[in-house]
Image 1: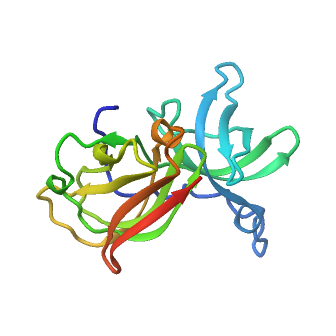
Image 2: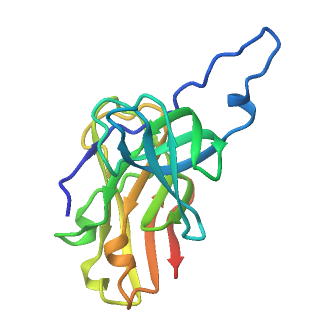
Image 3: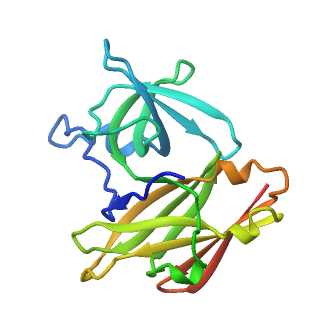
Length: 217
């Protein structure tokens, strides 16, 4: 599994283009798509960037456009993309904004699940696209790094229903207010197993208590 990655719990979309006239509403504010995508690569010569979009029907689309990426962005980084098509058949897009989101892979718990901190979140939505479980939630702002992982209970790894737990640790930092957070976890190594028919994610929700989200094949 990959090394533990720290997350600053926020993912805010960058601002769109400015208004062209005093009373004109720009298309970037009224006509756009908003998707979770994977950064594939960038053309060193032209600067054109390629993303992969996986639909809920498992179809994959390559999107190509121009924008500035956050410094240090690496291949396979998941991000939010706000855009509209220049040419849908060619996959070329106008990019209105991007924001990197917390990206990690499903990890295997090395200790009993109860050992890990599970600070509550406020779940907004959780959905699967391809090999990814995506999460939109709110977390408490601390101004410092925290950890967020999706852990597999290894005792269930060969069952038809695989049990996973969202673990969230503020450490000893003071929590202030709630902020938006997006995360995306690659679960492909487990999801693709023939015996796996359901991937179940356990979440402790600040408002709803212990919740489970089932993703069935």
